[in-house]
Length: 396
Ligand code: ADP
Ligand code: MG
Image 1 (cartoon, rainbow, N blue to C red):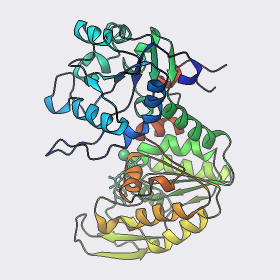
Image 2 (image 1 turned 180 degrees about the vertical axis):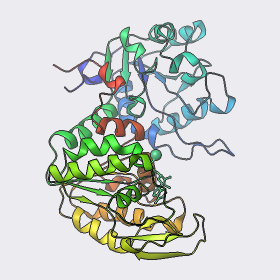
Image 3 (image 1 turned 120 degrees about the vertical axis):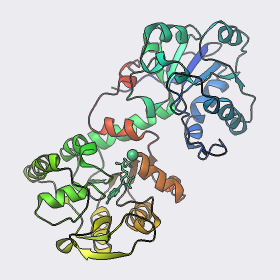
Image 4 (image 1 turned 45 degrees about the vertical axis):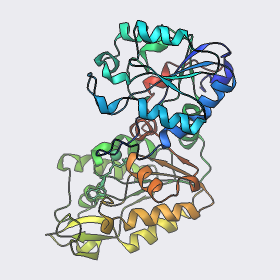
């Protein structure tokens, strides 16, 4: 069921508490914002509220202050960046609840923007404490959630507050739900999912759910080793989750029952050590040396995966094909990212690392959708109802 959006509610003159996900990466040495895409992603909602004369009160978490004030996790630099992006003044508050914040909110005029202090300076935020949620709610007349990336967490600002205010979705939230909902329920076919990343255990539920939704599954990355092992191949020192071998077997059987092709790499880049500068070799999957690690998919696998993806109208990609943090082991991941851009298909990138690669390669605009929520998109694609989505009003 689609959710009510900011367009479905009168916001003029109202105090609107807008939960955003401004948890941007910061440079650890300088504290500078290293990537502001999460701020940019919520601009349409903020602009809409400003243009429609709401009093806009933004709240977000930033980093992991663990319930205490951490000076370099204050929201002020983010408010400054927002101000630059909006071309408008943006004020800040020294806390996110309490009498001082309330009086500051009281001075807001229509179209003004206020950024509250980091929600996670209070332990009650992550505890979804009702008293804290009520104090947040007291600041506003309407609650808008645009923080898709935090919607899988039941916190005071994502779930608790919705009990006390009319709660609707922002444009980013609705876009994420629409694109990924379509992938699950009525994709343009054929559809494919390409899954990579470190561990099978992180993505078992994802694979189980997608198996029943898509026309072809492709698996690369560290998790491929467990499937290869299941099929009887030697995988050397590659990380195997022994307790997941049975589950991997079961998944392969299910794929067969559902008649969904399940492709694994046919060759691999192997290295004796996982470090920059290590010497590497390309070997067929039948010939992984016992003393080596699989660090990337090989050129034949890239070719195979690309020819399969080229047949598809909808493609969801989640998780890198290799240990992409080491440039030498990033070729498979980079080749897939470049290839996806050339296709005339719906391309959806979910997963923190995959989104990071796409962003770093400057390809974000060439994909149909790059999800702003790694963990949240994973949970959504597993078929879960996200707690932060559940509490929003339904559009009749
Ligand atoms: P995403 O954030 O896109 O969902 P994951 O968090 O599941 O992806 O996995 C990302 C991690 O997977 C990266 O740190 C990467 O180094 C690791 N990885 C990918 N391929 C391998 C491999 N062959 N061996 C070990 N780790 C791998
Ligand atoms: Mg990740």
